[in-house]
Amino acid sequence: MVGNLFLQNILRAYFPGYSSKHGLPLKHLKAADALMSCRTEEQGHSLYVCPEDNTPLQINHSCRHRSCPACAARKQAQWLNQQQQKLLPCGHSHMVFTLPTNINCFGNTILRGLARPYSGLVRRPCWNC
Ligand SMILES: [Zn+2]
Image (tube, rainbow, N blue to C red; front, side, top):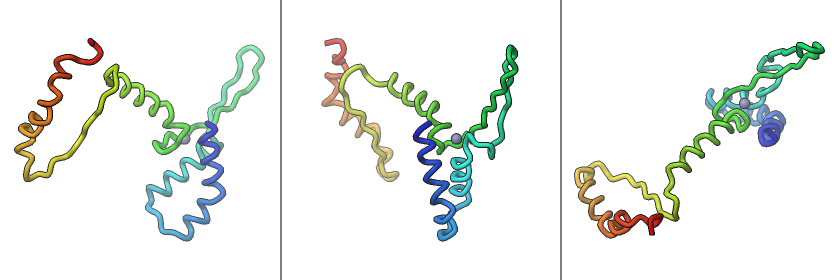
């Protein structure tokens, strides 16, 4: 939340001047508008009343924009947790590469060749050592 307020304050202070001087895509303007108005009256609010002493509580709505640090934080934490569940319980390297289309048909052969030096590790995973 602190990160979002910090970003929100910066955007409110400098974005209007910046956007007036630079032609920005509509999606950037919408993102900035969402972040600047997140959890403020501009997004609307819900009003709750305590049933015991009738104390009102106003909760401002969030922007739910994927670029908003406050709104996306929970999803980011969930995604990170899911990714960490997939990690092997030992030090390892994760390799991702893209083959050019013209040699794509050799992909499996190349992968087998790359995997051969590491086949001992696959047979004897380090967490079973
Ligand atoms: Zn937000």
